[in-house]
Image (cartoon, rainbow, N blue to C red; front, side, top):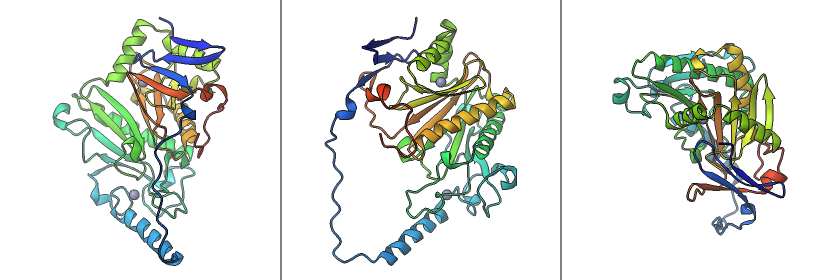
Length: 344
Ligand SMILES: [Zn+2]
Ligand SMILES: [Zn+2]
């Protein structure tokens, strides 16, 4: 079955996800006025004491770092360290007094109960940088975010993820491993300090299984998707057979995908150059969204091409009966896509 969509006057009206069956409609949703208003802040009774306010803000930043289990100096607040990468091993990483730049350990709260994975906790946390806040931060919301990391450091983080995946696969109860990032509270992250997760499961992950089944029935499907996104102007980058594009049928509004159509197999078994290129395009994708709340998930293994789904969690999400709305402008005027900091 070919990719299902409808166009009117050259404009995309709707498209159905070939995997989930959900439909995205391109509408004038961007013209809707939100009835929600921010509550007005009452005027201060006294003229503000700027110096005291600044001191309070800086004290707040220090306190946040003091209490953060992922900050240097608080290593004893996490489970036992499994892996650390020294700053000298990562080209271009920010100057730091921390003895590590990347650090991995098991998650205190396993995503999948240990009883499912032979009694061993197979959920891992990889802290991506010793810094809690962005350089020069003056407010607790000015957190470091992954797109600020140099590519070499992002790549080193992916290799740390892969090392954790290898460890998970030594457990005979583990059938599949997924690499997942949540950036920002809105995406479900419980810790603001930059990190991602590696999760081993006793059974295949449902979306990956769904993709594998659809591709078994229709092996040319992803080629069709690539042709479609190229024709629509949704392709953002291509390098050494790997592609980054805006996905019009993502799970959340504003989704992107990085896919290596000719590469399949577990990440733990793939050659370095493939991982390096994949990391470069995923890093480029993160740069499109910058500090916005987001998630990404890497899907790998036999029967599917190596790929990642990257979803912004910044835009209103309303899934009604398996449909999403995206602004029709996206397909007509907003390309090339979002720049970091853009609020469109
Ligand atoms: Zn921290
Ligand atoms: Zn997938």
